[in-house]
Image (cartoon, rainbow, N blue to C red; front, side):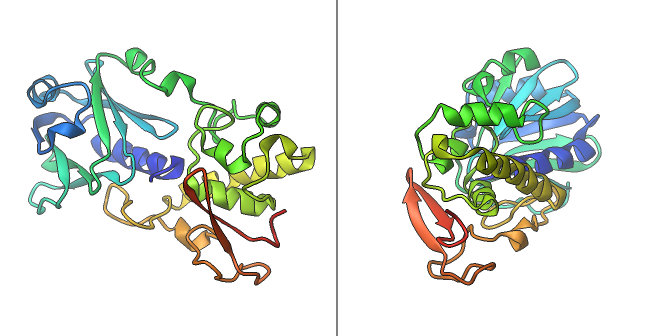
Length: 277
């Protein structure tokens, strides 16, 4: 599933390529991708509109039009946007198509078809939808402070990885990849209770979270299965992974101890039993 770095990379790509561009026509290949509007109204309301801004909060994208309309997009497991030449072949699993006035096409492609797009009248209205108002601070926001993080962890007895994956508790934007990697860099086992972490461990984890998210954004996120950037290129952070995606018994890159794989909260979890305590 695209996490914060992947969604931020998509946001940056869209910002460079569609801001100020006019939507000439909209085509809906899969109506179930639209969450709160019919394909007919979706096409009618967006045809003729220009993109004004592309914002992001955690894993949500907000595509704002000049007339105030806002698309909320959640990429879910495999959704992505591609900006392509008008003559380029349509990829399979393309669910929504925006014909632009610069002879380009913006396509929403989603292999697993879990991604969702909804349309609201304003950015203010869009911010009130679903879990969006309850999202915790994200690692690249000023509001994600060490003191906030410390106080959040004290409240919960759940495993620290489970807490990191909960978008409303301590931090938002984290998913399986970056939770595993941040915990490895901090030397903390994913099964540890959140409120059992010592002050120095919380400090290490806080710094590791900021590090993995920031570093991944710099190189375009992590491409493991379906994720690609808006130009179709891969994100290269997979080359930097220490534990995530390692095969069971594959050696730790640091200490050569076999990596362990467990299910934690129904999520696959990788860790080094020697480096992480």
